[in-house]
Length: 615
Ligand code: F6R
Image 1 (cartoon, rainbow, N blue to C red):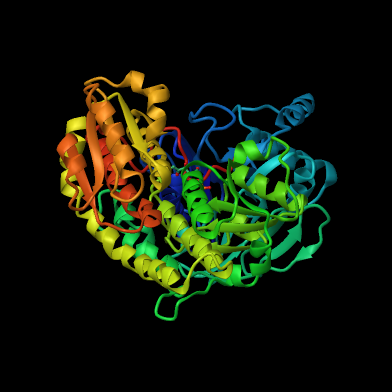
Image 2 (cartoon, protein in one colour; image 1 turned 60 degrees about the vertical axis):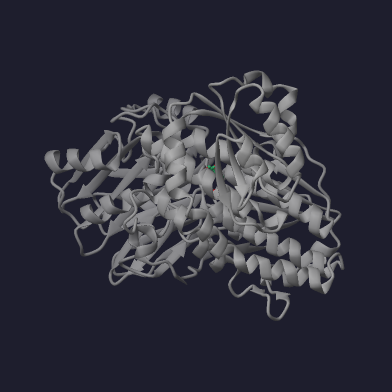
């Protein structure tokens, strides 16, 4: 969590950093700060609140000139969100400035030691401790900044992406990474530093992503020098050419990123299977699977690890893999898996799903599975992310940047990738006849158009949202493939509108949640034609006889549920296993509209961050 941006070059750093921080606000937005070197001194401004608040404050209170600077948008870990705890932090001499994304776990013992040596601290943060440790090392060892950073980092335990500069040597920024992402954009006699490439994409397409335990000295007029933090070994920068463009990271006429991203799903799903699915030739080509097919074919089981919405995509995949490819699957919360001493063997395949590719718990689960000999496959959206690099092989979801904190297009593209894998395995294992395989491939090709159709429900969903916007509790029910969609619908609503919502398998309702149902309780039921339709109809009867309000997601042309429900939203018909790609759409729109109507900050809901790099 937290976003960091730095600039050194020939342009005005201030607008670059402010714009970059706005783009990184998805990573944390409880406070923000900026430090600029104006040729003589450092001008620093920090505030509780958003980047917009920072800009207002900085415009009034500091000189914003200078071609060297850095900024930070925070998601608090150590110390409440307030002006003082915001980054950047100075060292005691006032010479060094730091920004940090991550956690220094042993900061208290280091702080005690520094206090004994006369250091004082303004904030409650672990980061202020780190910058003073660097200063102390620099003084004691009489070394340059880069060396001091390296020695200090060898004393700390934790995770970090940091950038530090020294006003006495304003031609360089020192950066280092362990556990949190850090990209360096390389321009013409200028460098950009950021948590991801979005802050610098309009200036350069060339970037280096630091690996864990690497540091770099970014010096004007010189090539980037990379070192291993532990043993000082030289590392060689792998300069990537980025494919992202500026339009992809802007709102493009929509009021919110979330709405834009919901509407991008037809394109995102198409991009995700484009080049992989060839229905006319009856093949699925995925390099990450083709090269490791034996691992999948010989696997005793597939373990899926993920968090949040990605975990819900994993649950959908469990149904798909078991149903189509007949492979046993277990789906685990990464945070539980990593700490419960799981039995893992070299006959297991672990699939890690993550939009950001940076989720700390998922990353730790991958490391554990690798240690135990499992083959680890990643399904990530962010190219070059930590999880993408840590896994043995993988397949990207080509959703494009997802900026809204609530995940939407990542979910449907994750399901798309996992469906492709399951179909491929089903074919290879002989579970599918040619004609069944062909039927699936051709149906998958119709999904973008059907998602487009499902999006046409938007005006109706808006009307329904208005009816239920003041609810305090909601239930979401689904069966089979659509049980995870119920969970996802509930998560979307609670995280952006702050309404309490629970997702349940529809039949499980009688084992407890039915007690909650009265005439105040909206119940969203996924009741598509294929997949236990009659059973769901019975569940709807049970809700109706207790006066619950029923909002049903049904297949086009449905009559039976339409008779019973208070509202119905139609989605096109498809194969049962592909139905989550459609049924999830109205639920995303519903949570969006309810949140907007309640005046909530849709793209940056309270207490959340897009990328959870702390456990
Ligand atoms: C919910 C949401 C989160 C993420 C979770 C995992 O809308 O966005 O629940 O799904 O934090 O993040 P990734 O997929 O980046 O590992």
